Image 1 (cartoon, rainbow, N blue to C red):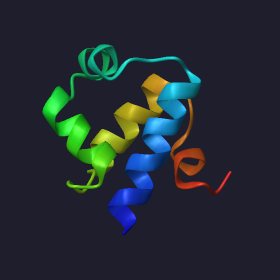
Image 2: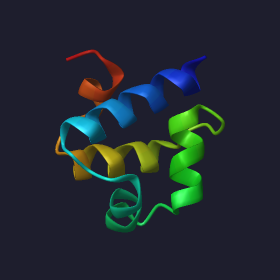
Image 3: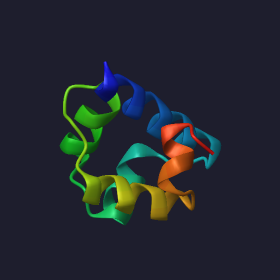
Length: 68
C-alpha cells in the first residue's frame, strides 16, 4: 500500500513537471525498469532514491510524502 502511494505521487509530480519517464530515469540515474516498478508500486523505494527523485523534481521529501 505504501509503495503505491509513493509511485502515484512520483508519477503525478513528474506529469506536473512535464517530465517523460525515460528522460527522468536518465536524469536521476535510476534505471527505467526500476523507476517504472516504483511508480507502479511493485518495488519499495529506498531513502536514497527518494532523495534523488525529490531533488530532480525540485520538491522536498515531505512534499512527496504529502506532509508539506
